[in-house]
Image (cartoon, rainbow, N blue to C red; front, top):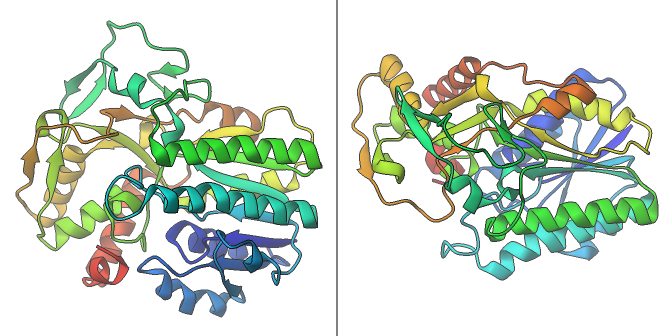
Length: 355
């Protein structure tokens, strides 16, 4: 089987490539990356050692697909991953839309041409920010939990946000480009009869993740903490009680192997993929974990809520478990240990990868 991974020199793309080759013999992997992100160069040098053929190209440029070989499946791991993209002063709104939406169109046109299947790694940030921000939460130790005395909106339970939760605006420019890409992908699959799977991924984390908060808060926090650089709790009282879950991208491999082997025609094509409650942690709890391991480090506080932030977001992956028997295999503590070891072995990683 031949696989093309877009954004292959990023943390997620490179991890998938290496881990999948280790799991399957006879697999050919090609990669497309514009090498725009700091840190990409590290993987550009490493990946060919695994027999992966890399193509320097940009998904925003339709002509960059013309010289790519024919493959059986495309895994789309290319995106601007920041919920603040388009409004943060670093990326324009047009750049964001060109990357996350126009890029998707170019990939889908390539899939149509070669009758290749398409697997989109989407995001948890397609869910309604206004509904999530209105949730009533209460402190439990050093983390927020859902207050039991409230009527929860459809698609939400103590297990987290399910696929039926509202995607009504506002969901940020970033979230809207990913949601629009999902709709386009499903329509292309139906219209031109090639298989589509959409995996709405929560936070992914692990060693080698690039050193920016928007590309992985767990890795960024640990690297910064170990270096004794400034950290700050932002919003929700400034206590760091906001909660997210995470999982390791290598745990996607079992799911991707099953999806690429599944005949087309299955009615449900969209799934939440996340760590769930067992892999959830607040920033304050993460700081306490770091303090136990590396000693105390002061954390600054800014009570004012930042745009698009939410106090509690855990992904309910029950549907993925029902259909694919999928659940994260790497424990939260293993993920944090892996990041910590990498941070200690690469003290310059934040600068090399973009912080």
